[in-house]
Image (cartoon, rainbow, N blue to C red; front, top):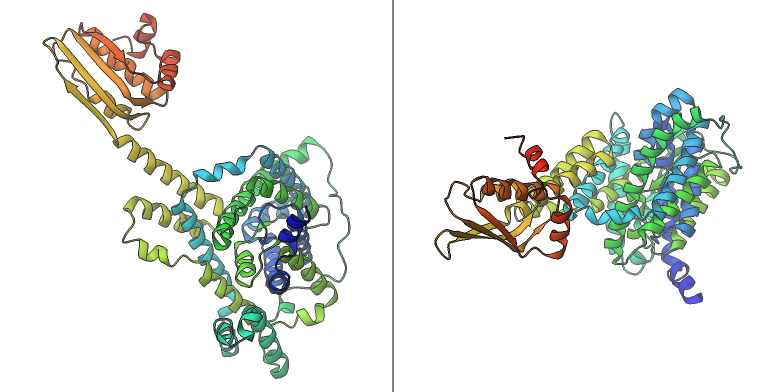
Length: 495
């Protein structure tokens, strides 16, 4: 127990502490911006980011991953807030938490195994593009000072690690924020700061039960939004967990993560925060800055709250250019540059899945739709490939007899090819269909077999099926109708 606790919390004290501080600084403008997107007060996003990070540090299944208020979730809240107000958003947040806990117990995270690597790559690239696009408003219609500060920030981020001794001791994003803030305070140049994003809260969060009537009408209002928030939140969290797994070469418990996300959202809703989920940008910042254990996530949440409540005057002076530089670094580090080179090596179908995921995600700004399209295309591609791996051979061992040997998978995608492989006009007394090297997967395959047997019998040919494996025999025995005259007429349309 002690060793497990030590490994999960205290095995990387220095790295986790510094990384947590960097993440906390990066969370502030993001949380404020997402609050503005959702149409709520900035403190709603800041309180959400604090509580999500703190609770998930204890309850989550992926150490080192950061959860907070996110843009993907904020976009889903706009209509609810506009039509019904903040209190209904808090109620929807609580229901989202309950649904996510239920998803964890139902082990829905196991469905992630159906998400192909090309979809994950497309998801990562789309997020990198969206993170970069989110910085563009801070880089348009501004003075040259902003570009100079941003360029200086990027130079510090990428150049500082090469300094001897100290370069590896302190995260370069933290150095970037501190140096550019000092430059801003010394020069007094006219550029946007965190304080210009919105008013920071001046008090700690308090328990807040949503002031909504506990009626079916309220449930009808919030349920559709909660379902969308649940799906998008878990999808983004599971994908982010997969990416962090790869970055750290460590496993994670994704069903526990589902429950943790649910608990975090319930806690968030009870202190007046908006629903959130895992953040790939901040998670990458945490990992790149040296964060590895649960402690880094906890420190990020606690430091965030302490800074916005007790150090608001100082935090408000941080130039946005410094944080833009950090997020551009995240965007560059997140994008899978090798996927561009792999376009020439990978099959066209794989490239299509990856590109489609990127295009749809960026075009809709909805991660769920992008991943759904990617998974759908990947599934269709797989079904097409497996469906083409079907061979039906024919031989005539003696006059008046034909043996067909079927090799491969018979299901909805290959059933037509399976049916077209037989010659029903050939005059033979007996046909033997050897299925010992074939497998029947669904009702469509069984119906195709029914049609083959029935057509041969109508030509006066005796049909014998041999070699069905146990699983195929079970589905054929249960659903085949070629030995039922009434069902035969119905299947063949009475002809």
